[in-house]
Amino acid sequence: MESVLIVSAGEKATALIAGMFKGYSTPRITISKSSSEARRILSSAEFDLVIINAPLSDEYGQNLAEICVESTNASCLMIIKSEHYESVSQSVELIGVMTIQKPINKALFIQAIRFINASRNRLSGLRIENQKLHKRIEDMKLINRAKFMLMQYLGFDENQAHKYLEKQAMDKRITRLEVAIEIIKIYEN
Image (cartoon, rainbow, N blue to C red; front, side):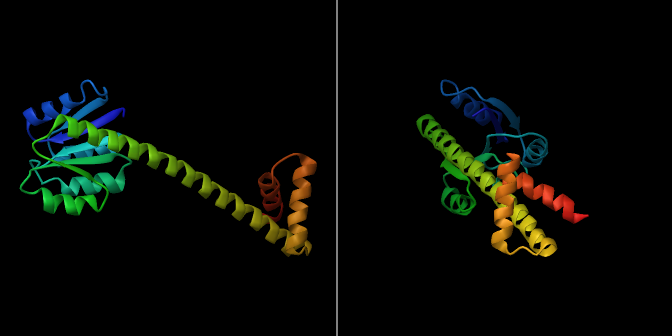
């Protein structure tokens, strides 16, 4: 974890939360005292983790947590007063926000950070896999578009178009995608 945004109205609580990282990791820590300030910071910088120490000066923190989850790649940890813990945690956990209850126990805090790190690593792997799959789908669309053009303009059937793409790729020592792009350029004009 390289960067953390701590959103907390109280200076003592902010110092306590920042101090919890000592001995575990040394991320770049940015501090915000309100939800509105945190939103401005989130719009211009990327963070690995946003810690919201509820309540904030201008809202409880649930809206900020929702914005964080929906519009950034940051993980979100919300620290909630014990009397509000059940109701708030039930609503924010549904959108992917991890919660812990006040008073903060350092061992529990570090355990939560480790869990968040493990989840981020897993999610990062899934995002990469998802991007690869989207790329393959886009490549397949282009290849199918080129096949359709061969069928439309040269009278090939689907099998002949497929074989033509394969043979051109082998003969030219390029990928089927590159052949497909060449065909699309030729027949698109």
